[in-house]
Length: 303
Ligand SMILES: [Zn+2]
Image (tube, rainbow, N blue to C red):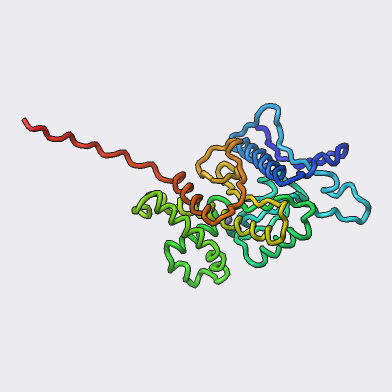
């Protein structure tokens, strides 16, 4: 069986093949195109095939970036085109899933992609020190997130939250996710009806909806941070990485097939009202199919 390669390529004869995106829209397309390539590669690995004429999936690396063309002793200048805030989950390798390489992304990873003080400090550093190159800031959640799952379980079973086995620092992460869980629960209650909590897959739907709302809320906060820094030309985007189809999308349907059209990074909400709309949308996507109605007995006919 053939191997299916995902290659980081440097061409000495053409050392600067990869031009940095000139603006935010081009940066968004670069990330989406990179994710399409990555998801195709993952699909090829899964099915053991690749489309004809595409024997490898190639991430181009510029010579300067890999440090091969520079004056002796000079360090390459840091010049990422995107700041990405994502989860620490090992199944969500940021550069790889966006088809990017050395010096392309400034990455902050923390469980649950929550934004504490230190995380915000890193973002502020990037916005100020790297504003020449940065075009977009991306908030990236992912399906099946362990931190969001922990917050959902604590929301459903509060005694678990106060267990001595839950460390205070872990509680801090969960506390930052609770508001999204509550918003998600409200959306599911509204769409699924009063018996939502007794319906099959309620917990799984609550986790997936909270993942999306958590990403949206953090993207909203990121937008405030970017505006506070007066970086008007930098756009804030958000999406959720699906562990099944390996695509980043928003809204995120966990059961969607991998298609080029499914890859989508959304612009950050501008108003908190959008969180409710998103939770309703997710609740609708995840609503269990209704049971077929029981046959109505034929009315008795008087003889
Ligand atoms: Zn996670």
